[in-house]
Amino acid sequence: MRTPTAVHHLSLSEYETLRLPGSELPTAVGEQLWRLLDQNGKKLLVTFPSPKTDQQWEFTAQGWVGQFVLPHQLQLNIQPKLPIARLFQLWEAAYDLRLAHLTDGLTTLDSVPAFFNLLAHILAQRVIRRGRQGLQQAYLSKTAQLPYVRGRLLSRQPAATQPTVQLACRYDAQTTDIMDNQILAFTLHQLARSGQCSALAQTAVRQAYHLLQPAVSLRPFTAQECQNRRYGRLNQDYAVMHALCRFFLEHTGPLLDEGDYAIMPFLLNMAQLYERSVANWLQAHLPAPYQVKAQESTPIGPHDELRFQIDLTLYGANGRPLAVLDTKYKTPDKPSQADVSQVITYAQARGCQHALLIYPQALPRPLNVWVGDVQLHTIHFGLERPLDQAGDEFLQQLWAQLHL
Image (cartoon, rainbow, N blue to C red):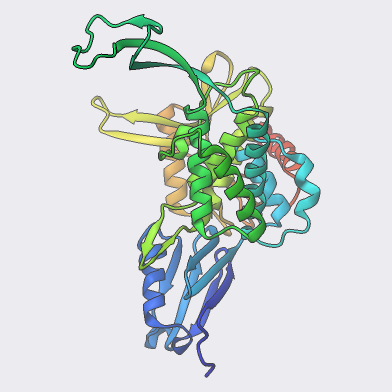
């Protein structure tokens, strides 16, 4: 048996199982992986050594890719089955970004951590460039006691307890300490603490954060707060920076305290990325009068006893629902009974005649059957080819199945 090293490096691909002799990994490290990645969201299935496993550890990736680090103990890398350049295209579509000028540079990337570092470096560089040009500012209302009148006097003034006169005023002041910049500062702060950045990316991230630090407050934000913000001529470049912030805040953290260290996993949910990519591609390319709505909440029952969250609903002329579409980031021989039941129920709830299951590649045993008054189809939005080519082929399948 090999003597265990101080830091264990484990590498596997999504949906792949890695087996190790029980003596290769300390039980305490395996328990941490189980607690943080198996119990907490089923990102990695951890099976402990036992007679059933021939006294081996078994680690099975569950559709999440990225990197997880236990300081001085373990580094776990889960690689996607897709080339990084294709992963980048999915990411662009999912986050409504167009950074095509970086595609050539992606050919040198060979891992998700390298992808993470590229995007962290891009965010830092954009913040630095904006900081040198001048950060976005806004007028905010302030109240203060001043030795002179500024803005308007408040009706209630402080009691005169000092020889100098102090006047309570409310006035508008221009400041860079606004939410647009605070989102950037918090994200950069999290990246700097993550332990995931390479030396080059870490230097850029710290430089960008220190540029913001004197003028911008540090307060926490969620990924949702990076969305649906208003952009105009003066702050249009913030749209890309906030999209990058949303990406990092969704897929890193929260910080997990482990002894004297903070652990910030970087793990991408490939099923979520695939679903968003398909939804955004369709929203951008469907011809009129068709449109698609993502993640619609559909109540069922006179008192909303049930509520379904449907991946995609396709609408035709006059806003009439035509079909429900459910993305499945997996490649079985045929749809599972659970998936069929789910999408048929969704179609009935929306009053649609068509229910479609979408897979990343054509199934060996596709379905095109009637289930009661709903027609079930399986089609694919492939990942073997560039996104626009896959999307065009997908639309051809969709129109053929719906007879449109």
